[in-house]
Length: 110
Image (tube, rainbow, N blue to C red; front, side, top):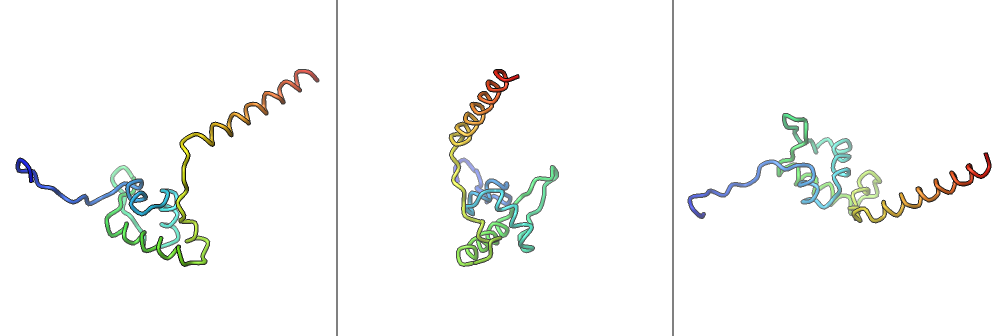
């Protein structure tokens, strides 16, 4: 405790903070809310989900079940590795080039 500061434990976490602690994408965490009635985070005044530590612990238990479950709803919990923009950019460039080819062909054959 420096300079009279009292360290406090955080009581509420955003969806992204909770998902990071659990090790799943936010979309999976949100989908679990529909499939598992025991996972019910509260919402703040702005309507955003806020997770308590008990909610995070519940989601971790759900994730542990996913490792041994044959249920496809639970199995979807594998984290998705995101490549920031790389795959999307290449994909969009291919689409753009394909559209240009189509436009060129249309211009030649009116």
